[in-house]
Length: 83
Image (tube, rainbow, N blue to C red; front, side, top):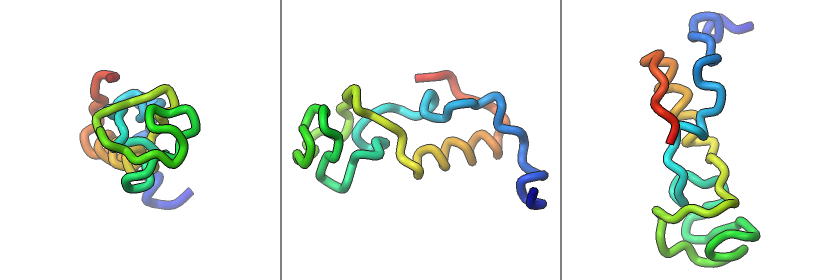
């Protein structure tokens, strides 16, 4: 285990960062710029995203949103309330 990982707090209190990230097109891993790549989404596969605040059943967290929430938790030690 690396020295950096030993210094970080254990991530047990925040078991699923996607519970703490606002679910919308902006934080969805199927968002490819202006194009939606989720098959059963509001816009359909390859459809143009017109409302980045929308959310559908296909939503899944992006690596960037996951990493930001994970780092925020490591810095503060405080988990947000689930969305």
